[in-house]
Amino acid sequence: MTTKNVLLLGRTGVVVEEAQQQLEMPHLHLIGGSGADDVRSAFAQAGLDHVIMGAGMDLETRLEIVQEVSGPATGRPCT
Image 1 (spheres, helix red, strand yellow):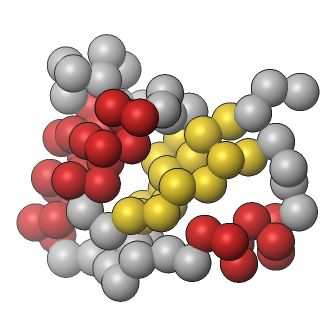
Image 2 (image 1 turned 180 degrees about the horizontal axis):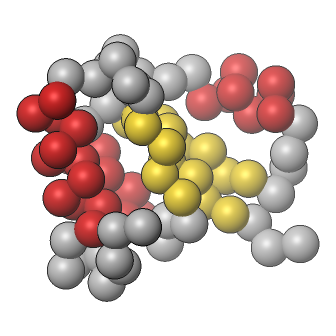
């Protein structure tokens, strides 16, 4: 099975190691972050398959993240 890169975004960051252990899914590479800079960095370092964003983030930050995820630099439409 191919490894999937998943970016987890939260208001105060994400404890990636703990999430990886709880999910028990070795085919997932979890990357933590808390803003648009982390999205840009994750796209630059690894092709992302999924981005999961927590609801606790303020609206302006969430909108900025959505723009980064669906922007032309990623080559991916927002779905």
